[in-house]
Image 1 (cartoon, rainbow, N blue to C red):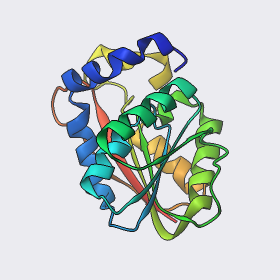
Image 2 (tube, rainbow, N blue to C red):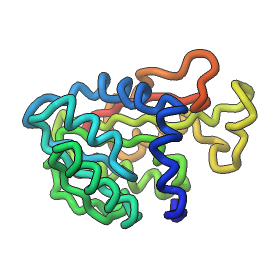
Image 3 (cartoon, rainbow, N blue to C red):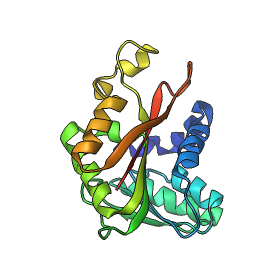
Image 4 (tube, rainbow, N blue to C red):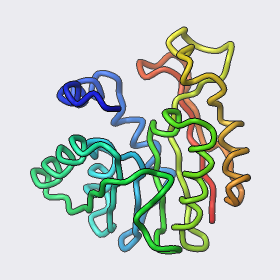
Length: 199
């Protein structure tokens, strides 16, 4: 997010907010198998991809992010945890990945930072890099109106709903986009949803 001085707060925040548990929900749905190639778009300091590497040691992992400081942190954490992954400086709408080469694309709390045109471009890139039958799995904040706490009334979340992203996935050429889960009750992270689509 361009606030490099805040990176040291990321891990304490994720522990307090319960992001590891929510990441677990996303990984459960992704059902990654040994040998799968997995790309995370907007990987930040790498927590989701590193959790996957410990869960499925045979997976081939790649994370992309436009923030070099976050990628340096991800590399250090991966080395400490003994998880092998590739970390690349890139944007979600221009992935440094060959066509039809990835089994899973993951996105966690990233898409709401993009405007609608960028979201569509990112979904088109996800479709391009996925193998036939490969899956895109998304976890993101729910900006649906009239529910939950006022923390989700941030302008960035206006209109950011499961229905909006499902429509965007269809426009990008992804198949069978569907909601696979959402938060229940009050959560420290606020409301969130999970989506899946296939190539």
